[in-house]
Length: 433
Image 1 (cartoon, helix red, strand yellow):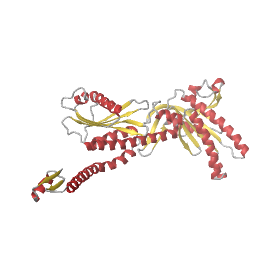
Image 2 (tube, rainbow, N blue to C red):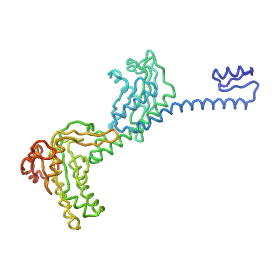
Image 3 (cartoon, rainbow, N blue to C red):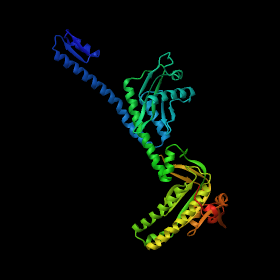
Image 4 (cartoon, rainbow, N blue to C red):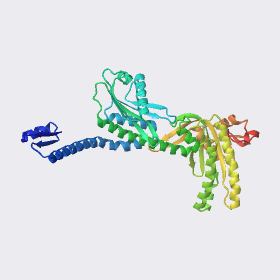
């Protein structure tokens, strides 16, 4: 506002500015003076708005790194909603994410009672926002009509707004915030703040999904990882008890070999061996837990569940032995040293999941049957596959096996009956189903 007056006193000017005037022009004046006064007033308004915007943005600077540091998607969704509620003084915040098949999943923060009426109303509001894929701000009337969200009004919400989460692939979902009836309404700057929070949340969400993809591809085949990420397979990565089969494979005589060969030659030989073994693990649906020096640790039955996890482990072990024999022939022709392996397999309930700290965790298994499989691999001679009795009971019609004496294995409290696996029998020698 520019005040134009013929009263050119200091008191008038001070009062005009205190009442919100952005300029003061004394009559008479030239047109160019009016233009200058209007331009100055507009610049003051712009600077004031920019100052307010920057004051709003400064607290958000710390939010971006905080969101990007969280790579667990469920926890990240909660943090995004918490930040939206905190920065915008919201009583309830929600995030509706679209799955691969475009079905929304709603996450709510601030509804401690988990009211079905509020959830249903937020689902309607999110669906409406997703259908338009644009920012929405609504101030509900004291007596809203059918054109407004009666469910939110009934749940005590007096105003709400939402913004779409956009990525290069399209809209990922919608972030919303609501205030109870009787609270202050949203302002234009609030939409801008929520949009920035939505952009930060979208970037953090994509980062978390990339991290999950990289994590999965460390342990399972690319095909299985893609299926999990696309939502075509239900999996849990949190720790839990589960019946699985564990396999250890260990190279025999590796230490003397490492003393005889140059490091470069040894690495080349080991990489060729581990590459071939890893392909076999993924072929049979195994999860590669880790490489342990000159060996590897595998479990079958998680994150993808297989009812025939014992059979898959047996077929995996037999193919490992056969493939190593082929590699041995190649190495012999090349004049290289020949590697041999021993394999141990055990079945039973173990703890499986992401185990470790929030900053460094491994997807692994723990328990007595893990220890047993490792001890069997240690005991196995070159070319031997040793299995526990529990494993053999589930595959005894598929293999020929020789019982060995009960043995007291280091780390195992009671004597264990173990068997040496000879081969798959008849038609069972085919590939894993």
